[in-house]
Length: 175
Image (cartoon, rainbow, N blue to C red; front, top):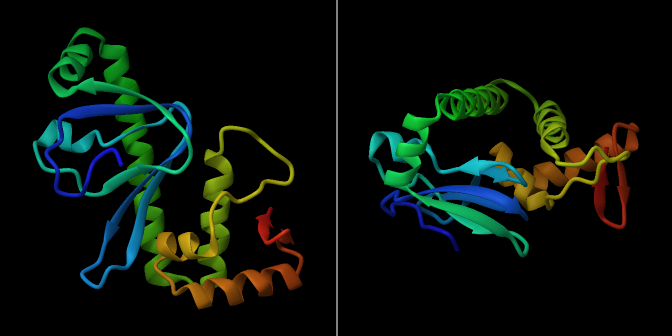
């Protein structure tokens, strides 16, 4: 556990090795995955700029190595190195683009379209370009990221396998 939803934001984090998952929970305990962060990815930055608590809980999914910089030193780093600030702005814009895509998917599209878009995004973010790509999430996690029930995800994945849009190998989704 790196931090909990509602904790004061005091650090900049970057993944050097491993995978970090950031989630939020509904009042009835349903998990919604805000993001998965891989080698080279940073996370939890917006609260550092706007002085609000972390919007989610961050945990490592596997043994991980992280860089953690205190807020004041991180802000000084950005002041002293404009090129780093510009790169961080680009990354944050990409995240906004992803959030916009997810909101659109959840609001307007059928389950197969949602799953297909989410799988394509995950494949594009993976640190290594494998062929075929093994989706690193469970069906429950896909449901948590797409706003669907796990039963809907299971039925949709099965239908996509039957139509040749993906493969299942040893219970793992391959695209």
